[in-house]
Image 1 (tube, one colour):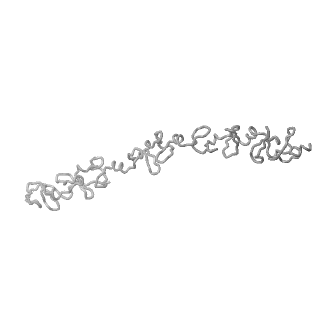
Image 2 (cartoon, helix red, strand yellow; image 1 turned 120 degrees about the vertical axis):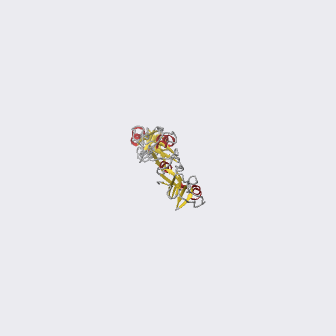
Image 3 (cartoon, rainbow, N blue to C red; image 1 turned 135 degrees about the horizontal axis):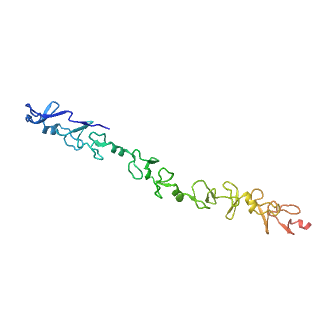
Length: 296
C-alpha cells in the first residue's frame, strides 16, 4: 500500500512586490502572481507550460493553483487520484499502485486478486464459505449437483468428468441395480451369471444366510447353501440313502426310472461290481450285473 505526498514540494507561489522579470518570457512580475522553482521566478503561464508536472492520469499539467499529489515520482491532480476500478477518491486513503500506473483502493485490490468461483465466476473474498476440489473453488452455495441442482456444499459427492453428483443422483444415474431388490448397489456387492447383487440379497432361500464366497447350488431361480440343499432339495441316493449333492466324491449321478444313485453306489446287488456306464439288469427292483442274474 502507498501513501501519497502533497505538493507543491519543489516550488512556491506568491505575488511579486519587487522588481523581477519572468525567467522564461522576461515579462515583468511586479504586482503579479508568480512561481518560484529551483531559485527561478516565472509567471504562471510559463510555469504551466514549461515547469509544471504532468498528471499521470489525465496527462494535463498540474497548474500552480491545483493541489498536487505525488508517489514514487508520479504525479496526479487531487481530483484525478481515484480508484481505477470503483472511481472512489483515494486522497488520504490507502491505495495500491498497479500495472499501467493505475491506483486501486484496498477493497478493489482484494476483490480483483481473490480466486474466482467456478460456479458464478465472482470473486471469493476472505470470510466466504467455499468448497475446494482439485485446485478449483466454489462458493459453498454455488457447489451444486449437476443432476438435481441441489446444493452439495460440504456434503459427499461423486465427480464425473466436469460434473458433480450428490450421493442420491449418482446412485440412480450410475450405480448398478441389484438383480433381486432392484435398488442401486453403492458399494461392495457381487456378480452371479453377469448380474449384480447386494451381498445381503444373495442368500440361501431356506436358511437366509449370505452365500457370497461360499459353495451353493442354484435350483431354477432359488439358491441354497450346501446344508440346506442336502436337507431340502437334493435327491436321496437309492443305494446309500444319503443326499446326492454334486459336491465332492460322487459328482456323477446315475438315473434309472424314478431313482438316482451316486455313481459309486450304483453297483451289482450280488457281487458289488460297479455298474456306472456298464450294462446292468433290474430284477425284482434290484440292480445286477449282466452275469449275476444267471446264478440266482
